[in-house]
Image (cartoon, rainbow, N blue to C red; front, side, top):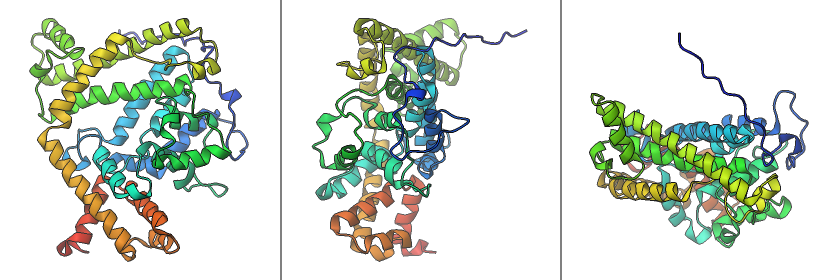
Length: 396
């Protein structure tokens, strides 16, 4: 008979975010009878239109290129799973870690970083585009689901995590694209010069773990490189050699999946060990201690960071710069640049809601409305819009 896995819940860490001590919301709301503030944040993210649209937004491969490649939605779910596991093992609030993880890519435009580059170039004279800022605008302004406020009215800790999950952001505040956050911060101080909670840091490092491992998986599935070429790459190379020794008859597909599973496990274990050392070295005993550290608390060990850097170098050379990926990115940049220019020059072709919004706008406001519209598109919708607007033979 198989035995169920049993694990005692960890003791709550002294430096964990406490939902009962949350600093609240910009617009006060009565508490929920069934959920903590952080669980409520998570649920609000899941119910957004922006979250649903992630199902057809590019991770590396455009959504229509294959059913098995990651999209922004599946990536976000994988990040959330890893973040929750790390948070639970460290005795953190796993609802907050999961909420930040689920929200972290809400501001990505279609076609991933190629789409971001295109929108940044198109809006350069009006401040540019940054997907992290766009995520913040989605949850504080662009999602309109509640009669009493725009955005989701997330908790202070959740907004802090959205903005600072990768660390303090004071060095970014001079960038024109960060003006919305600077303006918001005047009335609702998110302490932009400190680190966010350990839960938000768990979400950030879970993002690193997820995309590096799953890009290996997607790159192999796409035929951009072979398993044999990874055998000299740190971290995954030794795992592949061990697998072939342990299971000499295992087929390449199963080796690929097992290698990725073991890499994720190795990276999570490394984070747990290094974070424990960081807690001890920094004498971290409160959430405030986490915020005031001079480095991230939740982190990889130096050896793992070095190995991960070499894995990323391999992926950049063999996957992200592959001519097939470059061709798709080139198409994506042209599609979004042409859509942006057309909508700005001929706003009458915009849908009614956007057209009505740009009527009373100056040039900068018009560019932002158009940019918001395009940023919210899925890959498929952007492709179809471009076809309809630039090819009369497919007009309905």
